[in-house]
Length: 346
Image (cartoon, rainbow, N blue to C red):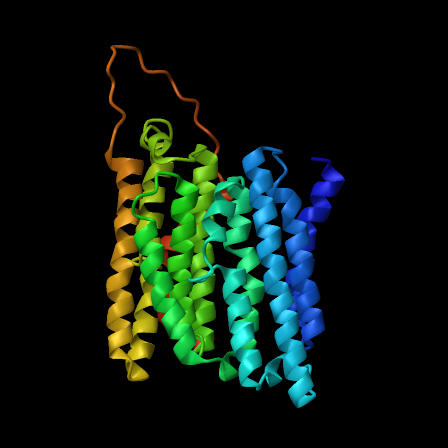
């Protein structure tokens, strides 16, 4: 890709995100979402492989439909209340349509079908953008309208997302699809808490972004696209495989790693809101996700490739340490002890 074009396509999502998160007017927020959608399409389809073009087409159609619904819900609200302010979304029908539109944009169940397919057709770096940066503007719109959203609908979608995200990730062998279902499962945790504690949902999103970025960049560095490749990566980069193991366990939400913090706080908040049944259900359903994280961890470090023939092992040149991966992995593993400071900042 032309360097100038690459610069435009990488800075445009930043512009679109900034416009959406800083706007108070629905039309400006919608414009930011559209800029994001159009900027990411060339990054998805840059390999010109039929699978990549298919992924870009699916992404465009789904996001266009969701954007149309966002515009429709804001217009309906403006028609009934005379308000174009994002925080003044009060009409029940508009709230329902907006929740559906944001669910489509994020890939929440039952609008999740496009996300694993699009991620599978994209390069790992673009997949990272789709899983993290592209989800930030819709999450901020949910954050700004959280006081008027239907909590029953969001809770139902959250439980379904956690269940299906874990269930459908069990039989996958492609790492990008596993990470897509992992993302759907994590979105369930954010959706269930957004109406009760919006700040906690944002904290969950930030920590999820940290951990997912660490996993994606590690896999990109190791050139891992499927589990069979992951099994043979241990001999090439043992240190990276070990840190990947810890990051995956953190993503699964095991203590004493960073990923345990948002789950712990969300369960605590749900109990305070007198929703112990929902807290129990979402905790048990996250065990499904734990299974495929453990399988990834097992493949990355505990298995060695079988050697059926006698041959000499090659020397592997040591790659320089990637600073980004080092920082992200450290944050993904070690933030739990400073959770009181994080909660004070919130």
